[in-house]
Length: 397
Image 1: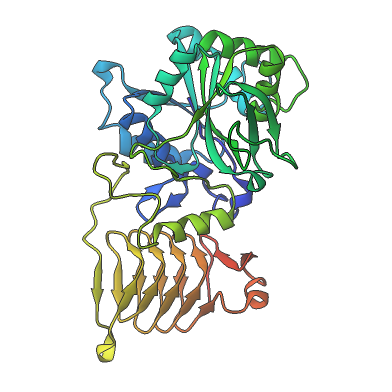
Image 2 (image 1 turned 60 degrees about the vertical axis):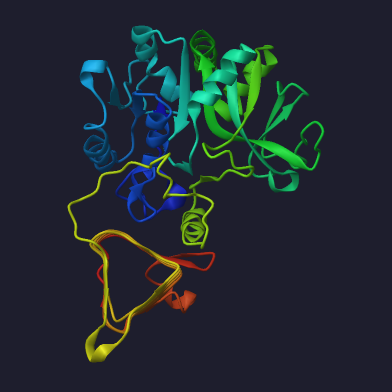
């Protein structure tokens, strides 16, 4: 069950017309593609996608991407599950409430265990290995855990574990995070990837539904499960390549969204999009290859440390440390630096973009400058931490 209904207020204006998991990422992909590709590559082919906010484009993308990869005859599916509003006249009130409102799915399918995922994280993970760990420990709940320096875990959910990785405490954003037994300088943070024994999950969220909590797994349900003495274990996150420091990012803010793209354009990125053993699937429109050509007056294009998607044309322009989504065009003498351009953006002759995120279909006029004067940018765009965001459908003159 994939939680994919988030409004993503901290990613506004990128989420003003779409759900957070449907936001373009890495040029070719949508954020949801990483979670669903992990499922398929792990052999999990019965997936319920819990949607809510502005889900039209997300549903369209998932249908086009995954319908040809799953077989109805083999009972494989990605089902779209909006709020049922059967138990209360409300939308999803929290992550736990989203599952509670869809208990009928578990009653009908009666699975032995349920994998709960978020649809807006960028990472590669073999969930089948986590399932094996879950069965080995006979846990009611297994939580995927990322190892980070202890003092950098103060803004995350942190697990306190014993020598056998059994969780004995769960703290949200602790000022002094607990270390790991044998290595007190690192902490285990919650990745939002859970495997529940179905009976334990139903009991836990049903009990939570009777309280006045925030109906959130991290804040409410997991601490309650620990208080009841349920067996809860941490599973150390490893990616399919067995890297000692696997890549995982929660793309929850504009700053993290921009930084994750800068991670991708590194000479050797931590998140390998080119691994044939663990493909990231997505829908690809029938577009021609990207093209880099000389512009007028034989202006030579210079492209470095960048990702160019299908249908892109760079014509006598400079593109550095940037990600260009399908159909982007950059005209003669334009300069694009450390920027993320979404589908069908046009950058006019002599325009200059520096640390800018541009949403779909925006036309940047010739000579226009963005990302050089934060005070001027703030008059019409969103500016945060040195990054300027140009929203969809804006008209620039």
